[in-house]
Image 1 (tube, one colour):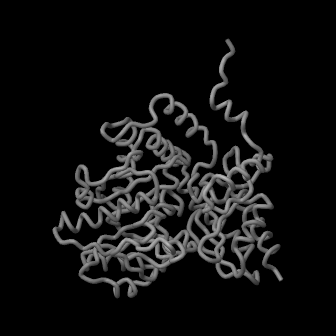
Image 2 (cartoon, helix red, strand yellow):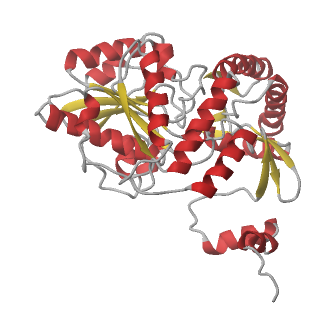
Image 3 (tube, one colour):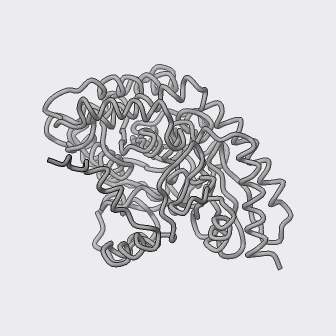
Length: 420
């Protein structure tokens, strides 16, 4: 009797070429993505390899997700072993990895804040972290303090996810259009403008929510002293300070948490993207006693904190520590920013070059999507942020040669599209 072909092997044998995959996508997937006509089949470190064999230097990293690059041997080996043991069970029980990962993150929070203790809640994504944060902030005022203050002030140009509360918190009309009515209780201030925030506070306001550096809004860096003043304002008015570190956290900006560079302590923050090295996992960290408002049964998620995802988080953090990737992000990021200044300063289409660590952007006059396409044709992957910003968020493992290639190639692509 012939041996049956294993399902994975059968799927590989039945794979389509690029044109076939694109045709299937056009026929069967909802049309909410404008995918480039490329099928990636493999990754090696900071490189993506397409079905046709072409190699691309990945300075998007799955939108700041693949912190360790692609195919990192430590992560691959750990995940392969864990899959054979246990992938998922419900939160009715413990597994071997969720609590140790929580300890790791809470210890880092305590170290970064000079001794402030926190607790962790695990979820699947940044948007789920936003939802958990909104619920916790409102429940803390309503139940712990006994005075409901459901209002939350967020920032124009922000991005907090696509679920309903997260989309409402995201103060960009293009993401909200056609999905009304939105979740009530949100107001929008100007990022980096304390007076704008203060003007919106009333007796229903309970929290201020914002990113440390706005990502989708255009890699917008706050003015010096803004966060210290905001922390004082929140303390004076009895407001919680909620920090979205989904994109900025985990070493992306040159410190483990981006808020460390601002000299403040948040009440709640949430992480995702890079935490699992590509495996979906998010974490909300809340200081005591705010965290105590999440009592048994009031919030949950089926897949959050499963063994595979939390192991991925543990391995990612261990590799980051062993290889000094946070410090590497700061140092190589400074080099990347310098090279981008060298390439783009003085070009007729350049507006600004800005960023922190390995989260940088080049603001231009002209069509950024056309520049992204031109860069891709030259073997470089970057993304668009805001209306006019070329965003670079490479894996934290990139070196100076990679950064040199990226800066030069992106400028050449911009010249192709924008230079008179």
